[in-house]
Amino acid sequence: MRQINHITLNTGHVRQSYPDEIDKGMYFALNRIVNDSFDSDGASVMDGYVLKSSRTQRATIGTIYAYDGVPILTTLCCESGDLQLWELLHKTATTPLVSQSSKQPETPYIADRLEVGAMAHLDAMKWTGDFSRCFGWICLSPSSIR
Image 1 (cartoon, rainbow, N blue to C red):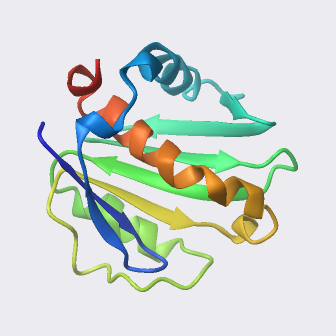
Image 2 (image 1 turned 120 degrees about the vertical axis):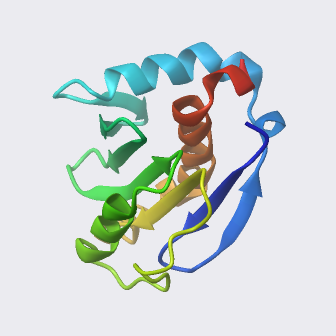
Image 3 (image 1 turned 180 degrees about the vertical axis):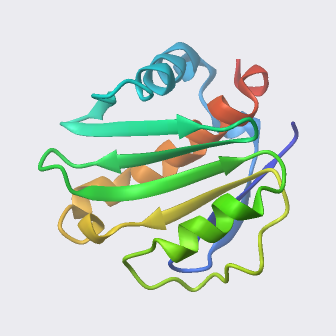
């Protein structure tokens, strides 16, 4: 995989992400975090933040929760057009979104949705964008970052 489109639903900001943006030394840590995120307790990401994820055949979706249990960020990593999940991200939003449910980005993509807890946990906003980019690569094309 040569690139992944990365969109933030709340702002509409879109960028292309490339595998050389991921530190190859992080591969095994990222792999462990993603694997652990499917457990009922999720995976510890950093400073008490926890990632909980689920997966379909074509996509992985994860939410980062703060130490107080409040959701901070939901990210969808999709390798092929699964319009149902894209629409679900819009339908279940509790914060305003700029993106439109009828205009899915070109695949593969990472779609980030800031959650209500983001404003109460601004410290997490310093690293969640970078984390979701890493999460996207390890889920969609792990061999590209190994």
